[in-house]
Every structure is written in structure tokens, then in C-alpha cells.
View 1 (cartoon, helix red, strand yellow):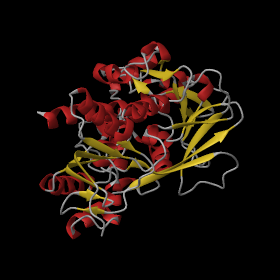
View 2 (view 1 turned 180 degrees about the vertical axis):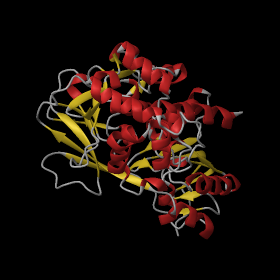
View 3 (view 1 turned 30 degrees about the vertical axis):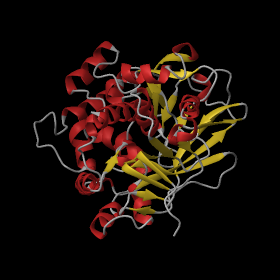
Amino acid sequence: MPAVTQRTKYLILGAGPSGLAFAHTLLAAGEKCFVILEKESEPGGLCRSIDVDGAPIDIGGGHFLDVRRQPVLDLLFRFMPESEWNRHTRVAKIRLHGLEIDHPLEANLWQLPVATQVEYLESVARAGCVGGMETPTAFEDWCRWKFGAKIADDYMLPYNRKLWRIPLNRLGTYWLHKLPDVSFRETLLSCLQRQMHGALPAHGEFLYPKSHGYGEVWRRMGAELGDRLILNTPVRSIDLSNRSVNVSFSADLIVNSIPWSIWRDANALPPAIAQAAAGLVNVPIDVDYHAGDAASPAHWIYEPDERIGYHRVLARSNFAPGSRGYWTETNARVSPAASGFRHRNEFAYPVNTLDKPELVQRIHAWAKSAHILPLGRWGYWEHMNSDVAVAMGITTAEATLR
């Protein structure tokens, strides 16, 4: 076997938002002894963009830069200044009862006919959380407990069946703090006052590039790394005896932001840890471009109708200036044959199964003992918006440098 040709202090696997943020935090602190490996021909991970029909599409589905984390903005504005971004106030809709209702549904029932509002309110009033019942630990039960049967059956459950395509009670509830929290009192007030009440969802305000897709900022970040970023280099083998990857790279510390299933396929995990990795579930997503008009003022639209394959529409002309057409996201396991441009993301969403926290904890405990540092969406097997992934990259690098 050929000798290892390059030794480095940090070997970062994956040049998505968290890996790029980790690398640039090292560089800003004067640490230059690192290499970042990326299997694709450009950096950005799920946030990459390409031009289709004269305008950008984010091939990982819709990605937007939330404005609430200043350290994240400070880092990204170094590569794409604030003047190159447009600021938007979030317009997200749900297609229901032949209408488009603002998201979240429970905070915007007032947009429905009065008789329908009453049906929803009666159902919410009977919800388990309103009656003080014990919080369920499985997702489907939790939806009825939290929102009442009608919101659960009309929206939450069909939408999530379409997205995940697994029995919903395989999902846990530990991740549901990510959902906007709207109480029964706030639901009632929104109907009486005909305005939204409750917590503002993620991306209440967001930034999107004026003249590019979202992938442009990550492309620029990658370019600034020079020869420390090595593209077109998938992980094919890992030797933990000297922490080497593909024989050619060896490190004091491996920083892992790629799926643990890739480590399993490379036969790099002890049997018990490989078994834990095999228990982690992910969803593949097809992103399809459509040349027609989305005919909506929304930036994106949730589609719970189970007769329709896709679960979300991105109306790109409403956030990407000068563009036309729209794109849809569909679980790749049920996608029809493509009729135009399609990009398939085999690793799109990690799935929050009931046993995921215990599986990830086992993997992380082993990783720590092997001088491997988990990072980002796939290192933690957690759905993270890009700003959260960047923030993790920054703070993890800072902690490592101490």
C-alpha cells in the first residue's frame, strides 16, 4: 500500500456550510495546518446552486440565510458583502381547503371561512395539551395532543407522511422544539383579531443573494481556501490506526461532517458502532424544475395533499430577482419519472427516529475516543438550517483551538 503522502493537523471531511465555517475559523486564528476534502466538484454541500433556465436553483431544495445570528452574518459577509443580498420578510403558505393559508396554520386559522375556523378551534380546545394530558413520546400521538385532531389530520400528519414516508410513530418528539409554539389562547386571539399570534417561525426574515443562487457564498468561501480545499475527492477508505483517509491524507484530528453511513461503507467503524450507524435513517429528495408560474405570492408553499407527490414548492421568482419558473421537492422514493431538470440528493434530511438520540450518542462516544470530531447536519444527524450549521462550525473550531 502506498505511504501516506500528506500529514495535517486537521482533516475536515465535507465542504458544506459547517465544514467551510470550521476551516475559515481556523484560518482566521492563524491555523493553516488543515485540509478539507469534498466529493463534489464545488463546495457548499446541500446549499450548492446551479443555473437552470437562466436563473439559479438551489439543488438541495430551498435554502435561505436567517438573519438572527450575527457571528454567522459577520463570517459570510466577508465573502459576499451585505450589499449583495436582498432582505425578505418570510411568506410561507400551506395549501388547504382550496386556499393558501399563512404558515404556521394554527396561528393563521383566521384566514379560513368562519365555519371552518370554528371546527378547528373546537378541535384545538379538545387537544391533550389544553387538557393537561401527559405529553406523548411518539410523533403521531404528539401531533394530536398538541394541535387537536383536525389540524393533525388535515395538515401535520399527511404532510409528514409525504416527507418521511415511514410510519410516523417511528419518529420521536425530542426535536419538536423547532416548530413554532402557538398556544390555544394565541390561536383563539388570532381568530378574534384576524392577525397572527405566537412565536415567529425560522426565517421570519431572511437574506437571499441579489444576483446569484445561495450557493455563491459557499463557492467564494471555498475559493479563498486555495489548495487546502481538495475537490472531487470522495471518501473511499479510512484507516483509524493513523487516522488516514484514502491513504493519501492523515491527521491528528478528523473533523467529520459527512454521513456516518459513508464511514460504515468504508469499513471504518467497529461492529457495534457500524450497527448504530446502520440504524440512522435519512430521506433522499428530488428537486425538480418547472417552467410554469407558481401563481403564488409565497416564497415557499407546503403541500399536504397526499394525492400530489411533492411536499414543497419554491416560487423562485419571489426571492430570486429576474427568474421564472419554480421548483418542487419530493421524497425520491416516490418521485415519478422526471420531465425536466432534476437533482437527486441521496442525503437530504436526517430522520428523527425514536432511537436516533441513543444511536448518535454511541457514535459520538466512540468518535471522541478515536480523535474524531462530529460536525454539522450529518455529524450530528440533525436537521439544521445553514445558519445553525455555520454557527456550529465557528464555535466548534473556536473550542478546538483553545
